[in-house]
Length: 257
Image (cartoon, rainbow, N blue to C red):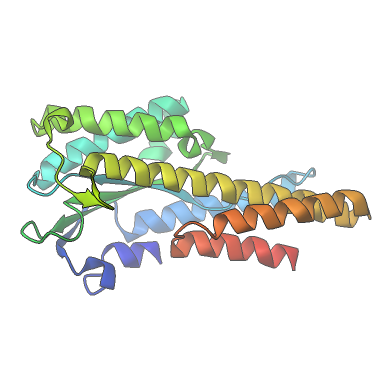
């Protein structure tokens, strides 16, 4: 579904988009990411007698965005994405074998936006990286330090390959009565996404504990986790959730039902 969305020219979210350009990977890459995730789930069922938290998603997605008025070439975007992926690979401390698979599970699509319109974002790249490498979940990709690192790597790479320093960018957007430039906006959106992912993982962990308490007929623990589940679910409802995030939450709810 995500693969179809990235290249769907007629999607309502893409009415301000001029071009959709695949710069890394293809539909086969997305399929490869999914297969690695499914293989991990299967092995978890077959060989992990203690159970463990099920894999909630196959990949992490990042959005690398520039303000309107800047249009790097496809080749420049490829260099920027490469730098960001290498930085994340170092964070995950991959060995040679893991890095070989990691490289084959990178999907990136460039959306070139209409520059003259006030509404909508500037040119941006949707970057998807598979979370499962050699039957290991790259937990680092889900942590705050990964978001901080890719932001730093992106800013440095844009300066290196495009010659644009984010510190020289003048605030250009108005939001709720105050000036907020695109770079700050993207940072806030990234932080919001991180908070949502944290709540979803918490929702899953509480569900696992609730199911265990139900299995053990531990009514006290069951009531405690029910209270926590409701609180976490109410917190999630305050965020603007994506379709993928809603699917993750609904899947967890089905486990409870």
